[in-house]
Image 1 (cartoon, rainbow, N blue to C red):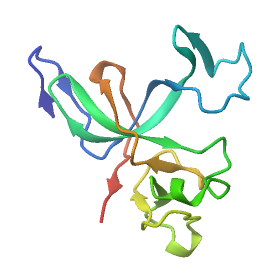
Image 2 (cartoon, one colour; image 1 turned 90 degrees about the vertical axis):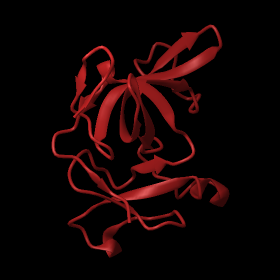
Image 3 (cartoon, one colour; image 1 turned 45 degrees about the vertical axis):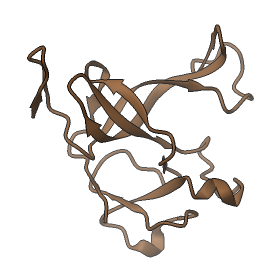
Image 4 (cartoon, rainbow, N blue to C red; image 1 turned 180 degrees about the vertical axis):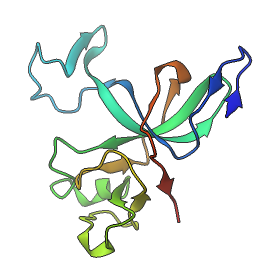
Length: 146
């Protein structure tokens, strides 16, 4: 547990999967106006949703995290090959490697427990910063990086 300047104790550990409100540029323009997953801002359409993230770095008041994406539930098989190198697939640590639908050039990231879909990928090139106050830990989750 780490204690920030304000005395706030954060139970979030490194490599824990958390669930937070997340806002990002809207990549899928087929999401219709009025959808709960889309908001209009002064700089254009944004995706607004609860998103799973993996904690990489803990600072006094914020965390640096990387997001998990399913790419509209389709995975990344349909994406250009150069995009695959920006992502890492996930697999449950109890599952054999043969069951992992890995389209990336890296071994999959093992997760002990937590949200899991075979189409989840970690976007390694899209770290973001969030505050501790918005983080909801996924009980028992942890990632193993080899």
